[in-house]
Amino acid sequence: MTHTRYAFVKAGWHADIVVRALEGFLQAIPQAQVDIVDVPGAFEMPLMARDLAASGRYAAVACAAFVVDGGIYRHDFVAQAVVNGLMQAGMETGVPVLSVSLTPHHYQETGHHNAIYREHFVQKGREAAEAALKIAAARSGLKAVA
View 1 (cartoon, helix red, strand yellow):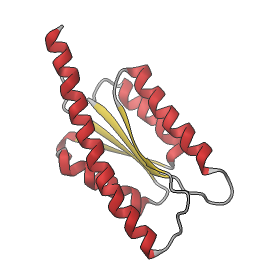
View 2: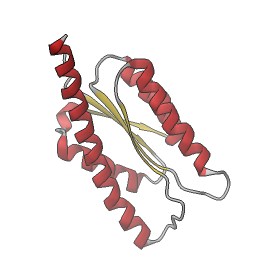
View 3: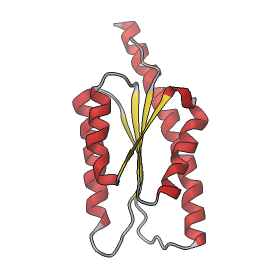
């Protein structure tokens, strides 16, 4: 069975920026085919992605977060754990899990930086949707050959 549904997980931190990835995603995949799930932050995405992928309902799961250096912890470690967790979720379930997780090193909460990242998230969301569609088509082609 070829799935035509997609899941989109978005982290709550910097929600005004992260939601732009969903906007980009919906430029390539109709909203009627997308289930949207909110999680508190990036660190919670891998578990949710794994659960969604394991449900058998989705052709792919995309996850979006904006992980910035808050001065209290090393955001590189969080970002690495998140991306590794998303990859593991995909490998464990056999369902593509895509990351739209950006981790700028020099982000400042200014109008200029916010505008740059809001626009960049739209592009990255669209790219994730295009990747999800291409992967689904390629996998469907593999099944047809087998």
